[in-house]
Every structure is written in C-alpha cells, then in structure tokens.
Length: 298
Ligand SMILES: Cc1cc2nc3c(=O)[nH]c(=O)nc-3n(C[C@H](O)[C@H](O)[C@H](O)COP(=O)(O)OP(=O)(O)OC[C@H]3O[C@@H](n4cnc5c(N)ncnc54)[C@H](O)[C@@H]3O)c2cc1C
View (cartoon, rainbow, N blue to C red):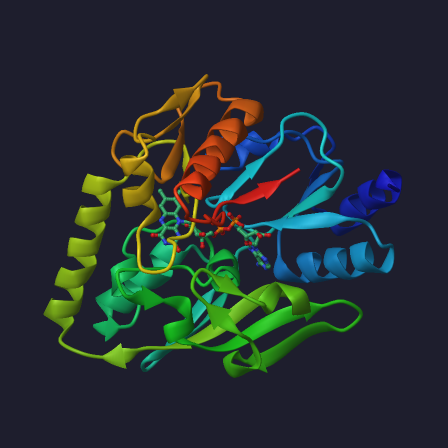
C-alpha cells in the first residue's frame, strides 16, 4: 500500500494522522490492532477530499464512526481507517424534520427529537453511535428504527463526491441496509411524527431504563454480538445454551445479557472471537443459524 501518499495527503489537508493507532482506543469494546494508517479529518470538506483521493488511488480503507458495533483482530491490519466522528457536523431542525451530518451522535439527535415532542426514535434512548453508523446498519430498538424516519441520505460517492438520494432508493432491513454499496454516508434527512410529548418522553425514559437494567451499559462492549434469529431472541437462545456470563481470558458474555460480549480487561481478539464462534457453533448444533450483528474487521 502507498502509505507515503496517504501521509502527505493527510498533511496537506490538515487531518490527524497516525500509522500506529490501535483501533482498541476507538472501539467501545476495546479490541482491535493497528491499521496501516489512521486519518481523522477535521471537517466534512477534508473528509470528502480524503475519500475521493483514497478511491482514486485504490487504497483499501474502512470507515469508522463511533466504534460501538465493531471488533478487529489484534496486531497489524491490512487496510487503512478513516475516522468520521467529531467533524464539527451540524443538525438543522425544521418543523418535524431534521437534516443531520453523519458525525452527529445519535443520542444527541434522538434526545432532541424527544425534547421537541416528536415520535419515531424514542425507543432508541441512549443507544450509542453516529448518524452514519445508524443509517448503515438501520439501528433500532423497541419497535423503532432508522428506516422508519429516514427520508433522504447524502452520500460521498467514488468519483462523484457528495450527492443526495431519496431514502426509498435504498433497501433497509432488520439491522441492515445496502447504503454502503453506494458510498459513504455524509448526512441524512429524517421526518418524525407528532404525538403526546409526555408520552413520548415517558417511552424514551422507559426504554433507556430498561436497557440500563438488562444490558451491560457501562462496560466495554459492542452491543449485540448476533442478530435475533427469526421469531426468537439471540440472548434468550444463548442463555439457554449456558453462555450468559461465560468467559474466555479477558472476554466474556455479559452476566446481564447473554448476547453482549464484554471486555473485562485485556481481552484479546483470539479469545473474544473464539468465544463468539463457540456460541455460534452451539446455536448451530441446536438448529439455529446465528448471524453476526457486530462487525469484525481483520
Ligand atoms: C451498549 C451498546 C448497546 C447497543 N444497543 C443497540 C441497540 O439496541 N440497537 C442497535 O441497533 N444497535 C445497538 N448498538 C450498536 C451500535 O450502537 C449501533 O450499531 C450504531 O449504529 C453504530 O454506529 P457507530 O457510529 O458506532 O458505527 P461503527 O461501529 O463505528 O461502525 C459500524 C459500521 O458502520 C460503518 N459506518 C460508520 N459510519 C459510517 C459512515 N458515515 N458512512 C458509511 N459507513 C459508516 C462502519 O464502516 C461499520 O461498517 C449498541 C452498542 C452498544 C455499545
């Protein structure tokens, strides 16, 4: 890989840059080695130029939001990372709609929608992540998801730059979308419904409290390891198979929720991944094919 080219690009644009940046520092789970380069643009115009150049030069890279759904192998990784968080992006509200840049934290956007008495994402109270990451995986909880409110998506596209699309141009499904195939998310538009503001606030608080009581909220984790299989819950299934609280080295399934992997301190990728694969094999032996929700980079 032509890392020297990337280094001078980062310098010219004024982006933060490193060739020894452990992803563990940026992933909530705290497991991940060093990509060939790590760039953090300071603005969306820097991000757009960096993306267009990396594509022009065919340099392999991945995009990082707030790292709340990710785990990576330890040691050197065969790609670069472009970090699209804290770029000084904005959200602009008008009536029941918002236009938000992709680096905006979802808790800020969801909290503001609830403060304005708007319905649509109140079940997502407290879920971490950026707007970009939430659009990509159609984040959701308690009956709400991004697909239910998103009306437009701004993408930075290979060879083209920034373009807006109707949300209906994309396919959204349970914890999935095809948005990433077309480009990198720079922002989105969402339209909410009106409702009883006190009821919406109560639902938001209830969802948050329920999550804090049943999930390892303050731990190093990446949220759900597996998607729920049709008609069932992965947590219930894994608990029944004896995985709740099960540990391997510094990694373990949470004592609170069997589908949450926790880094209890010093967890290696080898231990964490082996434990996840053990759970997946046990589920397969019980006749259920589990699909990863957490994304694994290696
Ligand atoms: C304690 C905890 C609880 C959670 N609970 C839930 C839950 O209830 N429901 C739920 O849906 N999720 C949950 N999650 C998972 C996580 O919050 C969501 O997946 C979130 O949307 C990820 O956003 P992110 O910015 O952290 O993305 P990252 O983890 O940084 O990245 C995830 C994926 O999105 C891509 N990506 C990020 N930004 C962009 C962009 N701008 N353009 C293109 N691709 C991009 C990355 O390349 C990667 O493929 C939880 C996580 C934790 C830690």
